[in-house]
Image (cartoon, rainbow, N blue to C red; front, side, top):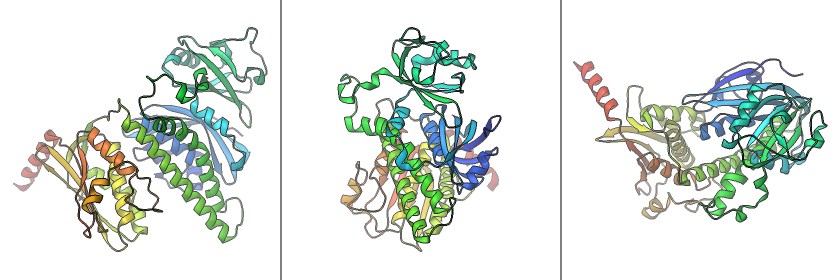
Length: 461
């Protein structure tokens, strides 16, 4: 049964679900999450992360697992600096969970290659649309103003005589032109269980392979563009389904299960999350190596960023038996940088520190401002780095000979690229046997620092 009316929710900059209507709040809890807590619905988390990374509103059909059954919904997310606004419609159960083996790879790939989605009812009338291509702007506006009309009213089909009403199979893969666009497009129509359709708007040019594109397009190495832009997005959906199905088995939502099989499901879910982490690294890698990559600088407090990072990873630290010291509530280190990128760097540094620090030891985060530079340090009590390792540690795919630790060898490379893009740097000193200490520097927010010092002097009078 389709849930009437929109379902609204909000998540914060760390992708924690802080507020949600039913039934989304209930699904969050049944998936093992908390309120508030990190979004526990894999498909929704992937969509929110993608929207925040692109800093653009996104919409698509997502599928989630709810107590052994699939739930589908059309979800729109709109990110801002601090919050992401989520709205779900067409919420309906779609039957038993589909086995991973039954997923259609071609459909997943087409969904990622599409430059827009249009949600249709059972009669192929427009319910909602989200078109990302700049030359589909006119069509997007027309569709928004024409909710309830046939989608074919807004485009020109290449084959004459194809007018509504027609069976959807006669229109599937039809080519068309759209107002304001010089390109030709394919319409791929995907029927939804329970009624209605999702129409993928796919440019005809995707039929060309990457090596057939003009030389002016391939400004990055072929492997980077193929993995980061094309293959990585196509892998997200099937992997999120694998994780969701494994979690359903692990939590025994589908029924009683022997302990050893629940353990196997836990391993599958962890492997899936590891793969998803690699995919996110590939997407970040392409972003930071893009010639037009530019962070959005803002006034931030490195001490506040440190406290947030520690809060996010506090459960992992406790499970590892490691104490984490972070700046006190009254400490401040005003800086200029992009909040989410700084938090990304800190989470990477803190994750590494927790990974390589023995149980029973400490990880310390310190902050300060020296002249025109603000800094934050992450120091652990692990093995430390030799001089040769300190030179190589920021290289791409460098893991210093470690294997089986879950790392991709991209985290520190990406983190340093982000630091430099924000006008700072990320460094580490060779300290073998004394633990590692990474220091992130950024331009200081001198106006804010002066105000802070004036307040300090006022309090001491």
